[in-house]
Image (cartoon, rainbow, N blue to C red; front, side, top):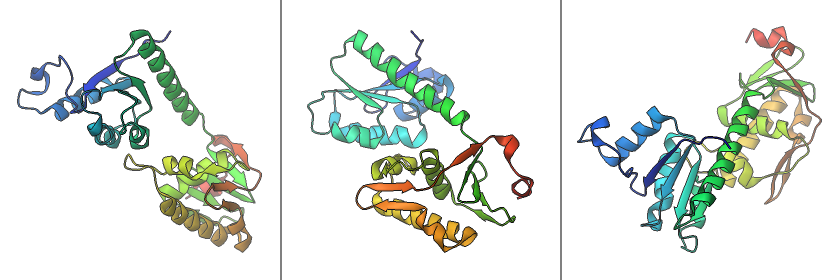
Length: 244
């Protein structure tokens, strides 16, 4: 069993038993909470929303705007506000009052998943090759064999990285919305569509009009990259791309 470091807070982000002196007696609850989060580097945040579940989604979004640490919400699971919690950025919810064994098991699971995700990102390929072009996600760069390149915006790069990581698999709109999440709220279908269209145009500018068909649309369902993809580590990056 892995040791898990948590911060426990209420819906107003006050931390039970926290010493006010650490961040100044005049600091409000929110300031102290984010100070503890910054200095303590916890594995997870446990938000006790049982006193005021209606405020839960707003509190979760507030935390999610500042950090990506997993959030476990403690609440009455029958409350009508609960379905909003995961949409707002909670990793999971657990029923109040809390069974300590169940709490520990849930924390172990979500922290393990978060650590695996970090390891996956660290081990991600430095380059994807498909349809005669090479995509360098860390550079937000597309490169053609003739040396031509195309810069991608942050949203376009994240979108292509996700699609290229699972070619031929339909990626649901909700999944892509989380990929393009910049502010604690998943991107909506329109925002995703705009990013897809920009990406299609840049692919077409680099390798011809047929490249527009590489990203297939499944109406009201999602998108997929319809091409075989090869991956490469840093030592496979060509000199042309290194020069940009």
